[in-house]
Image 1 (cartoon, rainbow, N blue to C red):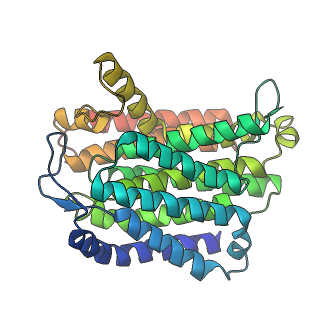
Image 2 (image 1 turned 60 degrees about the vertical axis):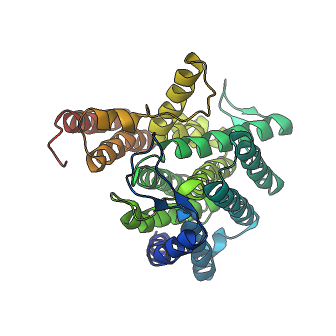
Length: 358
């Protein structure tokens, strides 16, 4: 645990220090978000925050590679994750600068998922009527779908200062805790791609937040949102590869199901926003990719909440779902239920009192 904490702190410090230089770089090359009718920000703001995150991740990998425990996490899977992450950052940089069309971005995201597949990172089984081992082609298809959905869920919530970075940091904390506790309880190796990936993921989000919180000095852009989504999806998929469902399911169902369900839990809010947006746009006869100003954070702000308070409310809703689900695998279900009730009650009260923390 100590080495992963060191990894997290290094990635956070590096991202914090690198981001101002990337901001100047983005301004120089014209990667700046102008003000559109659907936007919340009131001043042109540079993008390419994902470049700072990628640089922090890269340097962190180079620094911690020689640590006794974390160093064992560097293998074939980690190499695949790094290459796929590099590809989506380059894709996101192009979109942040030149505004690529939705289908081009979707094809690029699928190619990034293909890189993961080349390195053997894919879903191998699903817990249906016991355990079903998936044919290679089906497992590959499911893997690509998980990557696409996770990337676009993160992308959809990146519409307000500090929102995506904060939510993904909370998601990463819940996922890291689950992956690490699973290794401790069931004797898996604590040195693996899921723990390393989520530790770095949390770090870059924490390091980026001071620059991205309201009023944001830089946006993560698609280079950042796609990077975060890919890292979270890759951590989930690689974790399923470490779990022997046949060994666990007879003892406890939770740890068998959670590697597949946890990404849905930690991203429940952005996934809900994604589904609602698609349904809303299709009902209006528009493209599912057509932008609008009716996302969950827009509605919270329309109710009288400030940007800061809106972000905090959505942070708490994310934690309300993610943490009890993670805990349910290792503690009695009543503990998870009580925690969920307590956190949801607090979040509802926070949502109904516009002046608190505004």
